[in-house]
Image (tube, rainbow, N blue to C red):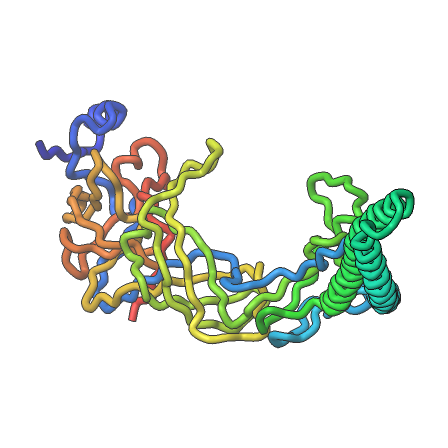
Length: 437
């Protein structure tokens, strides 16, 4: 039903319809020309632009840790400062190798001692073997001679024959005992030699470990990039609290084995992480161009492209942050040695160019019952007209249908003029900017 507001008594009727939450479905409102600010619908080329902010991150980095060397803390004697450029294989941090050099010297001394013990054990074993060999020959000769004597017993008296038998038994016992002694000597010599060899092996292993530790005292960069020195947790004495800033490691500081001292970041592979609202999400796609301005580099623009757009929304955890957003990753087109992780950036996603687009001020669009509408000028009245909004850009609404160029639209809701002059009721669109071309 269309109705027209007249001056006088009908104002009361209009007020009742407005209070009833738009139940009268008003379409025309008569208000004097000077009461309603307005603008005309314009037609021209428009490029959609979607601004947001983000943070620069490195996609490739390697941490630099104190070597896992037993024996207590390590003292830093060389450290590349934050921001310095290094190549793969360059020394980033070096630790005092004095203790490991001492361990190496001690291991060498132990090795020389073990080798001397091996030489002595081998010589002693050779002497013992020769003595045992001589003793075995004598013992076997004694047995053989006793056996010859026993073979003459038939010609001897009973007493002499008994003496020969006893002599043979004694010679055999001596030979058997000597054979056991030889085996014992051989086993003992082998055990002593094995012990010395084990001592030598242990000394060699300690030497190699000390040499490796000395090499590990110089920690080299695994990749080329920029050095970022980390905070020294030991300086806090194990006490941490919110907002606390740890001092960076520096030459002379102590570090425990395994502590992260620095990080090497590949500045050639940087990306920006940001979030966009669910209203802006339909206008973003992979490889879409992006203009980037770093707060740390004012006045300079960097080109980039959308690397990825999350397919699912994320929601704020707290009640004051319930807007659903999408994670977006932007890849920079070129390297810049001045860029650092953590830089804040202002991004502008460049959307499609719309030729001959019809646009009106964003505040001229109002929402009624889930539909967008505008108030167009019809003589001395304002008539409600449904429109279809394609996008909001740079403070203007890009329309798909509903109006023609030159149509005059109200910038405030004419129906609200009966309640308070100057009250605006425009619908808020996405945080989108655009430049009309």
